[in-house]
Length: 333
Ligand code: DP6
Image (cartoon, rainbow, N blue to C red; front, side, top):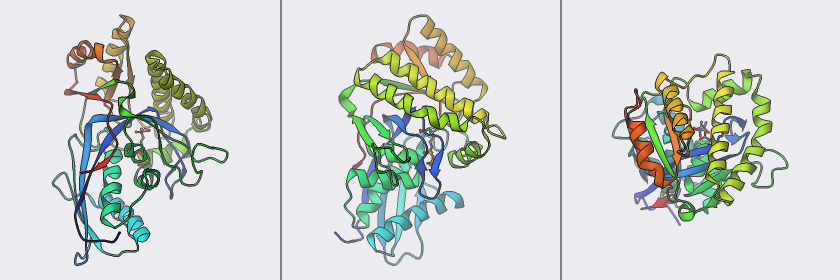
């Protein structure tokens, strides 16, 4: 393959971690200090078009119809440099990328964004990579993007000596189960779409440097991964939900123990947690997970979706509710 200046368009779906990634083994290589397991989402995706053009003086990037901030542009340019180096080309790229959901609000836009960019830009650069190589490369853009190369239920192993699930220096995600394996649903309760105050990258560095709990977080992750694989294997929803909540609250406890504390929750986040727990105590199987933002995600089985959605929409402070299923692999369009 060679660069033919043709535009390639790829679509990648967002994902939400059921066992959370927070912390890096190596910042330059962006290797995770803990493994993670996610569910790819059907309803939330990024579509990215890329073409390399010899006459462009610099990379020309448009995200959701606008020019990105200098920080975002720099992050994308250095990621494109990795691809240029690998393909042995120097041309600059024209990138057009659109999310069908709000950017930068704890909805993992960097996951679908870097996964779609990896797929379209490697193709446009004349490379033809395996899914494993695409995933390891996407990880350099954003750790969670490594998981968005695959649909279904996906694990990104950590980078520690003795971890046999992936090459320890350059981890790639693996698909544990495909999209059609289990019809789980996730409701996303949107509380605020404002940009988060501290991004994941800075937040992880601060946590590792200042939290007295960081070491226990890293040491206890393997047990959660094992239990989650097992819950998936046996399609045990209660167990899956229980581990997902445990990993989520453990991560937020860790974040709160950083100095200064990382507090991503809003008032409505806490209200939603209580309301959904109340539903569960009434016998409706529903579990929550929350990322580096205020949004609450509610995990459930399809038969309870309408009932949970009705309650979620009535919670004070919830702007709207997205309903999503398990999503597919990233693809070229
Ligand atoms: C809380 O993948 O955004 O969503 O690798 O620095 O880009 P970088 O971090 P990112 O972190 C995601 C953190 C999380 C948990 C998760 O998705 O596993």
